Length: 171
Image 1 (cartoon, helix red, strand yellow):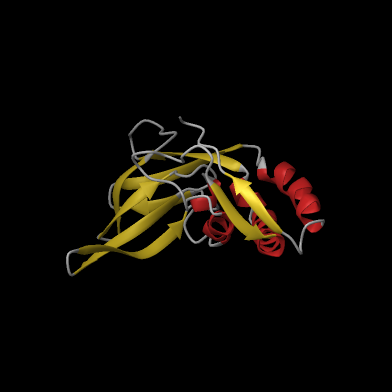
Image 2: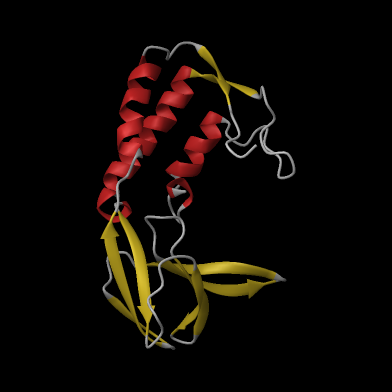
């Protein structure tokens, strides 16, 4: 999901403002009838920040990315382990709209992300496994259609406490 890309802080802030995961459990999903209560201004502020961030990054988020590493076949999803300059990391195409390498390190039994290399505007990058080529295909960003009417609606309810009913799409 676009909201959870690396260094995209407005996405998790939006989810938190809407209380998306407040009633969620891994075992049960979102129970039927789950409500959260929020001030209209809180939700409006988060939605406004999200729209501004998506608009700011639109030229990068508006693509589905794929890659080809050396002589390997072209890959359209997921990712793989990779190393750059002798540093180990992982290459990822998730969520959609992102393509990056996270270089990793260890500290007291924990894996740390030492650096994130955003590959979306790079055509190629040299890796320890050969040349990595990045490809992109235009994709629609539905948030640009959804957020403006939501903001219009919320603008009429800035001074109210709103109840939000979260519905689990899976169950």
